[in-house]
Length: 450
Image (cartoon, rainbow, N blue to C red; front, side, top):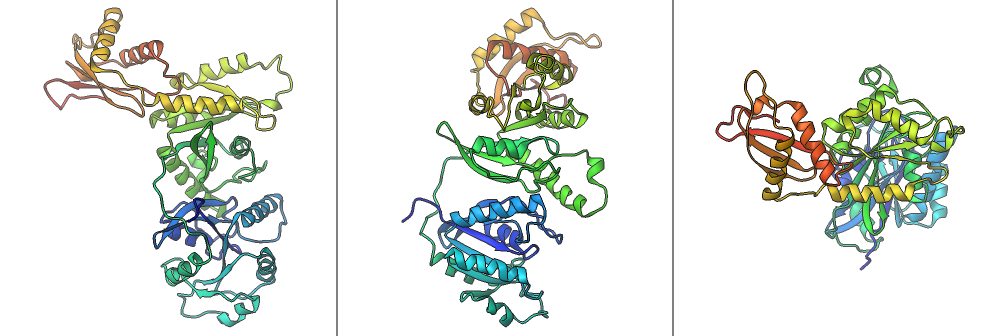
């Protein structure tokens, strides 16, 4: 039995149904499905299970002529994944005619020497424009009529695929540390991913919105399993809503990016060091603050700054800190994907911040801390009412959450909360980790306040 999970690659022309099949096999909605061609650019990977067997499914970009740089890079990634795979599922749209591009792709697959399973998709349609016999001219012996959208024929197809790939049983593995790369379009997320991985996993382009899906990649930092989530660039909601082919895809991209934020343990907020901080940068960081996500601010493209004397790290840091006071607790690191500047330090910082998420204080230590803090700065009176702290307890981790039982919880001023958060940070190393403090009445439920 193989310890390495075998890989099955989905290939085909644009709009042949690869992403729909990927979502069905992985029981997810990770890949964006659209009627518009070339929606998928990077490769999507996820584990699938069938008949008590495990295998990796790879959704590739639609095969087409590399008539523009982004498409050319997508075809390079497809070629690289073909070399890593143990089997291929070649999808064609059964409602369309055979094309020369189909024939070109078939030649490449024949030369690969891999077992190829030819799947005629959308066979649920009553009227096929082209009989399936024409597709048999491509020379594949394993032919299957399927409907990826509702699952027709999928079990038969997978049963045959499992006969030719190594056996790998589904196993329970330790949950990886999930790290989301976030930022506005063209800030350098895919470049940073490739630099951290030490290989080309995602398309890099000066063209904005190159990345559309939220692509997940498994890496290893100092013996720890990391899942990097490369997300689509986030624009202002008003711009996403404009009509057009791109707006529909971008809308679904933004939805998946926000889901990636929810699932991530740590978020890397990327800002372009070669440009001034923008309002959208601040909106993204504000979103992370509101979601109580562990955060590291990563300044990218620092190699593009030629005049380091007049644009020093200290000066840039001062400007950022003055504009990002609401997330003052997030560490800041300057990087370059081209030169590798500070990438090893970033890996270490990710692990350090992750460990801080489990920070905890015993009830006795916490109440001693609250007493000492109140001796310096007790809760202020609001409208002749001065809240009195009874006791406190820690009620959560990831991130740390503390509940303070007191009188008049609704009268607790935000400045007292900030004071306690600052005191905690002064006494304990909690850089990169949000601290949640809520107030509750010892006697009633109706006056509780977060």
